[in-house]
Length: 119
Image 1 (tube, one colour):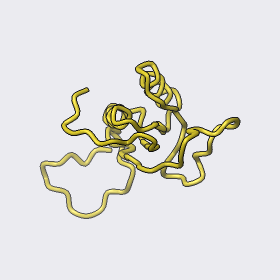
Image 2 (cartoon, one colour):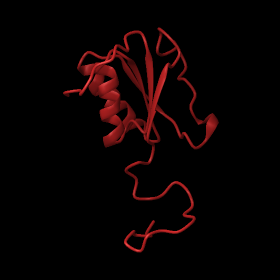
Image 3 (cartoon, one colour):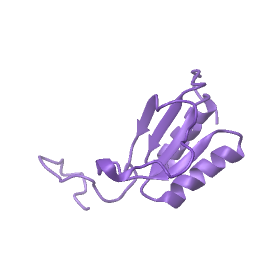
Image 4 (cartoon, helix red, strand yellow):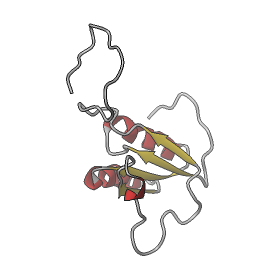
């Protein structure tokens, strides 16, 4: 992936919520290419782990986790050795539900007549 700029995230841990989706899986890859260890969080553990596995296959450090960021206590580290081993999270990229056809919050206020009001 061609990044428009490079920053050194070596030794840093990035948490990407919604990481199993199209948009945030690319964010996870960009962060990994900058040197970060990446924790990929998603409602769907299989999707999160698929993204993390693809990153690991390319030589990056990544792990997938199931998490619902709308429920604070939902994410817990898995049993066993802690991951990632080097440091606590130092940056977070979040866009859960960005590609979901269903809104995550109630619709309030005025919507332009050209916008669809469908869930």
